Length: 228
Image 1 (cartoon, rainbow, N blue to C red):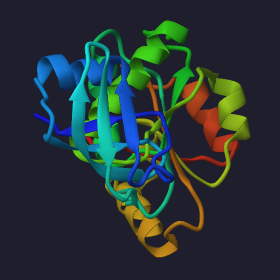
Image 2: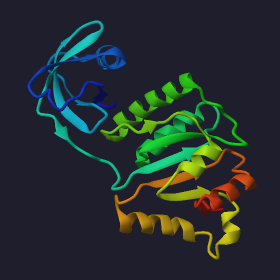
Image 3: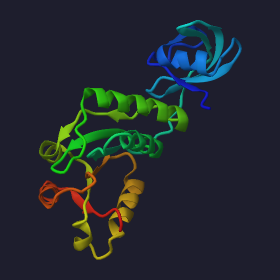
């Protein structure tokens, strides 16, 4: 069971102070993990800081912690990685969030495409943001992945910049070696480091339409295949 807990309160100035953990995190620590005074946990604030904390007292709705010296510990990729994706249905959305948090995606942009099967609203996006916190607790990231508002395909594709890859079956017909684009992504990321962000667009279950792929290519996106 994870001993990491999230608090939206900044940790950078909390060294040696008593810190109040409340909300769902306090409930989990107090009533699920049955914390008692003297127990040690890790608290992180989602913007890069974490600290060891000692439980001082446990109440019904909050837990008082003694914060040790916070540290700015980054476990991020050496470049920003944005994933624009047409979300799947139901619980697979949370599974997707869990996995992309684990691999280091910096920002998730839900795309509204021709063949989209899910139309996320504010409530479902808030649920995904809670899933980001849970995944970060498990995998050790101290920066929370951003879940952006839903973007319509045409405006997003035309406005994006930097290094951009567009996953589409059409790519295999334009490449001598279908595995080549994936190797290019890895090579580009390794050689250019954090100089420029990487954006990858992935379609819905039925894939992007040919018209969408053409629009992306015309806007300067590089079409790639994710393999057979």
